Amino acid sequence: MNQSLPSLGRISKAVIPAAGLGTRFLPATKATPKEMLPVVDKPAIQYVVEEAVAAGLSDVLMITGRNKRPLEDHFDRNYELEEALSRKGDDERLSKVQESSDLATMHYVRQGAPRGLGHAVLCAAPHVGEQPFAVLLGDDLIDPRDPLLSRMVEVQEREGGSVIALMEVEPSQIHLYGCAAVEATVDSDVVKVTDLVEKPDAGEAPSNYAIIGRYVLDPAVFGMLRETEPGRGGEIQLTDALQKLASDEKIGGPVHGVVFKGRRYDTGDRGDYLRAIVRLACEREDLGPDFRAWLRRYVSEEM
Ligand code: UTP
Image (cartoon, rainbow, N blue to C red):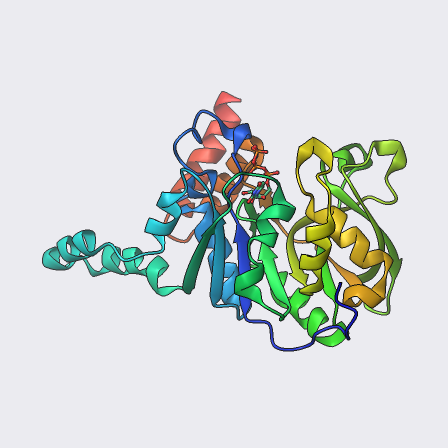
């Protein structure tokens, strides 16, 4: 257990757990990782890596598992394709191919067996060391125009400890999320987290603040994860370890929440995935005008 002062310092490492089985998206995810499903013309995971880089975190560790090779290939060079495009003088497509391999310094570690999000985060311990670090869930897409992670990094650097992302949801939906009991702070978008419960029944939820897939964590979380027994579904839950941090500030400093009011899509959920594509396609300069016109006609004539 880390009884020392909470670690402060510039955060540079991002951890992206992407070793889940993606069962909600079968059969598409039988042989393809759900993080590789395209959102318009980029795989969902690329938006997540771009978000980490935009928040100043260019050292990215991805936690992968079986069937996840395409993730590594996507962030690597593809010499054959690059050469073919450059022979044709197709610079526009060439730069699209190179974009993902030039984005960040990528590292990979395999989880072995999908024993839960908490276990996936624990796999990052040797790489992360003793510094605070960010965790971005690979299937959670935050609209690039609504910066969340950079605000969380700012709060962590000011307050120390850990910072989680929260979003208000309908009470009927809270059983799908981890849920936080909170106290207000002087900042309207920041709360102090006093307790956490994983997927509570509606009547037992301490609030309607749901935990969403962005975290900035004190490394003391690793010690808590090592002590955490498998919880719901036999998986080691990250929320259970964070609950221990929130209940005793001496372990790894305070836990704060940044309340996010922007656009977020769970691309591991089929409905949300479709909404993400329609919304982002409508707003694209190249595709948007034609697509919006078609969508308007479709809605008025065929629905
Ligand atoms: P999910 O709860 O979405 O689970 O994981 P899942 O297995 O990916 O998808 P479904 O529910 O079967 O469709 C939340 C995040 O935690 C990662 C996932 O990759 C996802 O980013 N995760 C989950 C791991 O990395 N390892 C695990 O053992 C479990």
